[in-house]
Length: 623
Image (cartoon, rainbow, N blue to C red):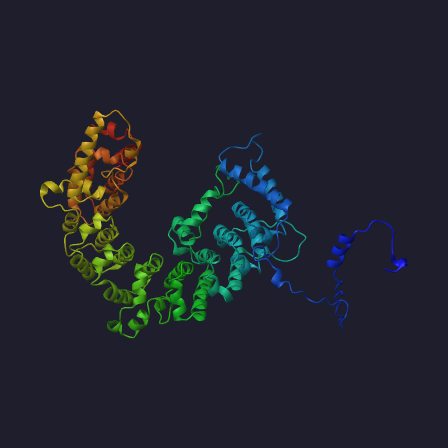
């Protein structure tokens, strides 16, 4: 090495060698591409691939999330302690503190609605807050989400927020249809806030182009069902049935863990606003028209095979079921090419063309009949399809197969639904085919078909065969002495030989227990076979509603019970309902009811000395 390049000091050969070994020539900096455009034009960046589908509108700031957690805790406390009165002077509005707190939370929420709705923690808080919003705030909240509903409906967490909004919207729309409009606070912002009715219609217009795909989306499908229920409120007869139509068991269980969902503001009677809900009895004409357009959109975008594929899908089947109800409600089902006609594989078209005799059995419908998910769809079809189409279905898929269908664990529910609209001649066919099957149905606790047959006979008012013969054969009862045990056999759903066996077993166990002083907790946990069952109680109540010419054998069975047996039944939650049915039935003669009440004289103190028996005693005294 030349002298001028040498330096004094220790040599670090190894380090120098390492440095030279990992030395890389720096890469040239990328040159910025020059664009021959004005400086104010900013090229659009390709951000579409960078959007996180879990947070399409961005993430919520940690401080904001912490604030809304405190809001959730406070609202939960108020909801759980709703009945407690506010502390302080009685002249002070008990809702004032809550109102100020709620206004502060709404102010913090402003501008962040979409981010909060898509956040896994804050979405539940928004659902809880929506129950306490007044009509004006709800309209503002709906309006802030406008233009993004398709994205929100497809989101895992925001979809539940939208579903809750559609649920609470019924109260506001009900008041709007009555002309009850909220006072609009003064604001410097320009523009006119749309009514919630108009907002719902605009949301439907936004979702209409992609409605056929949304109903098959795993997150959007339940929201679509809530929207259809809002547009056609007469599809469900009660709040419980509407909730079961839009929520799965898993979703309902998760919702129950979130605590009470109701308004935090108390009304003048001390109850929350959520308690006295205003249910929307009839939908505005525009809502019915929009529901019709949804059905037409699915018809237009999906062909026959795609429509039938929806019935086999766990996600799309409940939505298709609701669309069929909308179709039937608006008299659209009785059209060739309707959604119901497609699922029925052209049965309605064949009936329209007078070709019902040439209908062949389809494997597709046979599969739906026995599928645990799709059978619910077929229940809707047999109950809502046109009469001519139902007769064709009965002839093709039910007649000749009733014994197998009644014993099937899934198909028996569809058959029970079909029995609700059979004619007198079809009832005679049921008697003939199921003559030797009733006992098997009782042994397997499949009482739905028998109960549906009894209810149908009660509606028709006549029967080609006495129903008492059917009931006696189902429980192996033949002699007059055995007929006195009809009520305990039906309540326990045990044929007479099994009832005697269970009775002897119980007597044996009682005797052995009297000689033993030890407590067997495990044996007590086993259900007593002689305990009245809900299915047996429902069956008894159906028999008591039969016409007077057909229900006498049931009344005789009740009077054949001793007073101690009647009191024992009255002290049971399921058995006491039988006596309710006896006193409420319009087909039971007043003389029989009076005798039933008079038989308890001298024993009422024993009857009412029980939580359930006292309720039966009240009914007897009010007769």
